[in-house]
Length: 273
Ligand SMILES: [Zn+2]
Image (cartoon, rainbow, N blue to C red; front, top):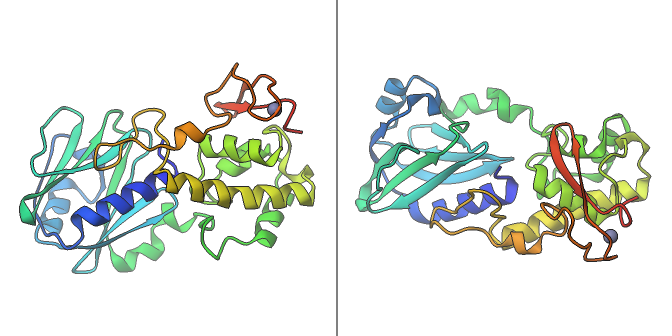
């Protein structure tokens, strides 16, 4: 599932390709990808709009259009965006936007869990999925005091707490495993029992790992491609995620895999306390 670094990578690549382009037409083979409004209204309202800029909030991608409209995209498990002069149709491509300048932009999603919304700019502050997100980990609003207090009040396992988008936005399974490894904290520890130094470590490592992953254009484990059709490169930097049975890079012990809240979770029993 694309997490913050992957969505940021998509945003940057799309920005370069589609900013300033007009949407001339849109067609769909699976209209339910558009969660709201109905596809007919979506189509009517989006044709003729210009893509002015793109932004990201958590794992949400926002296309800012003229006429005070925003198209919001959440990729969920397998969604991705493509831009090309001509899109070769297949059954996984659910939306094709014809753009000015001879380009087309398509949304592809094998598992069809991704969703798209078109809202008025003024509705953004009432748009619940974004409204309830916690702070952006790479922004100045992510502050240690608040983060520490949220953990102190939560008896759930730290792995579960970091996956909660209301605590901090943008982390998913891969980066939480990597953050906890780098911080030396076991995924099963209750958040409210962590020492201050451990919380500080986690707080700093979140920022460090996400910034590094963006530099590497995200992680390709399953089905993540940038709009250029390339994968990310951060998978070569992964220390524990997907490494069950491999040697820990630090102590040479064996990386274990357990299941926490239904999610495959990887850690080093020696290095993580
Ligand atoms: Zn180790």
